[in-house]
Amino acid sequence: MKKRILFIAVLFVISLFIYSNFKMKQDDPSILRPLLTKVENYIPERDKKNLEVSKVDVAWQLDHILKTFNRITDVLSKSNPDDYSSSINAARTFSLTAGYIPRGRAQSPNVVRPPDVIITEDIYKQLEEAKANISKLKSLDNNANFDHPYFGQLNKAHAIRFIEVHTKHHLKIVRDILNE
Image (cartoon, rainbow, N blue to C red):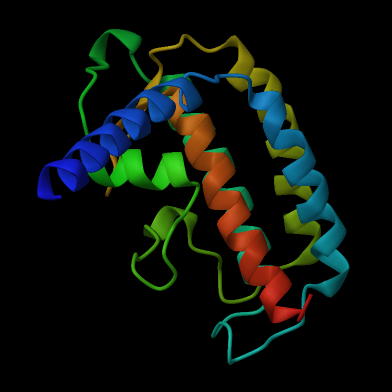
């Protein structure tokens, strides 16, 4: 019985690894376009807040999504592809494969934290920058990279998947704030 459980566990881990490598090799940033449309659709709800879900309002979530998207693109575009070194990171593999980021576990770096006062016009400007960054991401070398504080060095495909998972994570918080 123990051998059977161990065998199933090993198969599961191998399957997860194979799937994660397949999933994270999807390097087409066009998959991010519909997520940006969702961000845009929530802008009119910017002032809504639900303290049972989050200490911050919808505007904070949207601003953070866009800052993260745009800063990652900036760092990737300035990176040296020769500096990329592939490595195994269990947290990255789990999170990016499962498409899941646990709530309230990580602290956002200051560079992607929204200001105390969020101006609607600034959200729209960041949204336009993010839309333009989809084309920029497409043209980057596959080994363009950036260092994530928890997931280590991410290449272009990992970064696109991270942006996708991160955006979905915060859009879920927005839906929960709005009781959708």
